[in-house]
Amino acid sequence: MSLSFSYRHLYYFWAVAKEGGLTRAAERLGLSVQTVSTQVRELEQALGAALLKPAGRGLTLTDAGQAALEVAEQIFSLGETLPERVRDAATAPAVRLAVGISDGLPKLVVQRLLQPIIDTPHLRLLCHEDEFDDLLGDLALHRLDVVLADRPAPPNPNLRVYSHPLGSSPMAWFAAPRWAAAAARDFPASLADVPLLLPTDHAAVRLRLN
Image 1 (cartoon, rainbow, N blue to C red):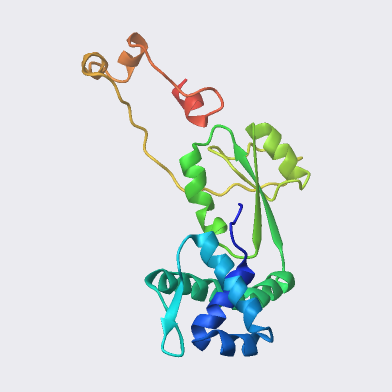
Image 2 (cartoon, rainbow, N blue to C red):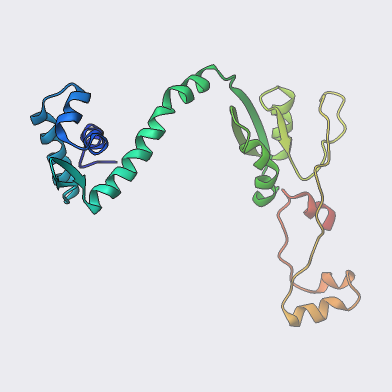
């Protein structure tokens, strides 16, 4: 992102607005009045509006200056939290969770299952999508911490894995009125006589449908 002004210009303007004049702002900043005045003028030129106007022996804000001050207050208030946030991030333990996602699992389901993890601070989530059998192999080799799938792991004495159901959902059929009427007769055997769009073999529900 390219900015037409520097935050130094904004900081000098903020000091002038807070102190109510160039002289007091220059004393606070340890700079000459000319330097501070030049920086504020450069900010005004960059923004295309006058930010300050004379008021008695000092300066006051224009409407544009008031808007600029409100933004500056937010920026510098947020900046004050930077050291603490960096310190917390540097000292907090970084937890890594590698999740394998079966390619037959609907993405909306994956999002809902992972949402609590996504909202957990100081946790780095790594997702890897692949076929179910390959994911189980990576899980057995400790390349993955957990696998999300639409089926339990098959019994295998060589794999020390455990399956836990996380939820269930009903199965629904959708059809145009013409086909719905035909399928309603002698359902579900009637499905053999109507055209169907089914999930691929990667989805466990397809195996049950077969």
